[in-house]
Image 1 (spheres, rainbow, N blue to C red):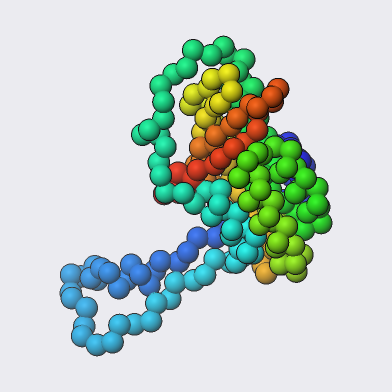
Image 2: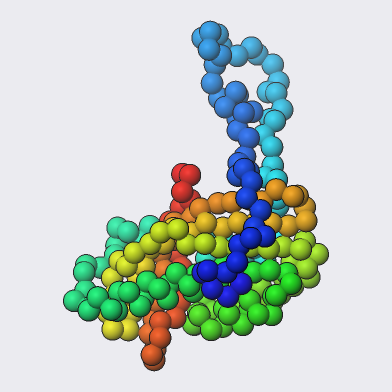
Length: 212
């Protein structure tokens, strides 16, 4: 899994698993007939769990990469007078780099970690590598596979050495806990730096999921 166009024939596409909020809704609203709920102990909630519990490494990675609460759209700088080629290069680097950073397979974990080292820099690279490496056993036991696909994006700003890109990514997460894959779309903002002759990922901020 080393590029945005990695083979996806083995990818399991099934219905997305979403939490069952039936119990929550029923307890929060009166019935359609307008009658108030009867006094007595609150009924037990019946909400179901997601079909595939995330393995620790994935949970930490998603928290690291996508869990920030700041919405950068409101604070992004204005347009930069940079040639179009810089925008194209930055966008392509963000698209391919995010795929490499957020995808892994229990069978190719060493290669996946090496890819992170190639596409990221600074604290982002160190933390992502450390978390994935520390979770080898859990990933192997769960036979975990996470594939990421970029389904949309654009450049927010760019200079000769820094850029900001927004992306919509689709993450497909599988493990031996269930035959059903969990598919979620995220909106993220990616910071890039160009220390020498190519763009590297330096930070990722999550701005929500597509179903919010």
